[in-house]
Image (cartoon, rainbow, N blue to C red; front, side, top):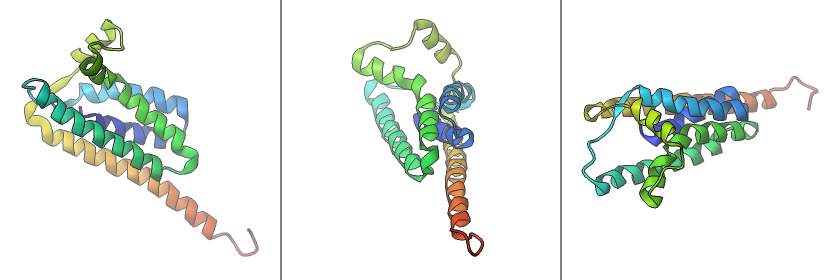
Amino acid sequence: MLVTNHVLSGAVIGAATRRVAPAFALGVLSHFALDAAPHWQVAWRGRPTFMQVAVSDGLAGLAVMGAMTVIAPRDERAAVLAGMAGAALPDLDKPSKVFFGFSPFPRAFDRVHMRIQDEAPHRFKYEVATGGVLLAVAIGLLLGRRQRRALSRDHWPLGRD
């Protein structure tokens, strides 16, 4: 699963829970749920191929984190950030292995993480569809709530500040 989709699921979780600790914990759990769902994985032909996808996806994931943080109502930003951080956390093994030669997680954790993957090269359409749905839900939750708050401030009954 692309890290961008994990980040989007974390944004949805943070927006739905609006609480930091549950958002982070559910974000981590969502990572494993998404990894167990059928998703795309290209047959890597060495480090250059992996890095092309990983760098693009990592940058897209960071851009999504920034955008979701900006559109989140102020009082929900910490929960949205926590959800996104929790959802992306288990994939820190990949850049750690590339740049430092080891995973920051125990071997048992990495074994479970690798074992649950349901990947195939023909599933890119699932990856894109998942991202589209998660993006729509995240934006709907965050902007919808923001818009409702703005409307409620602008439409006080006469005589109220």
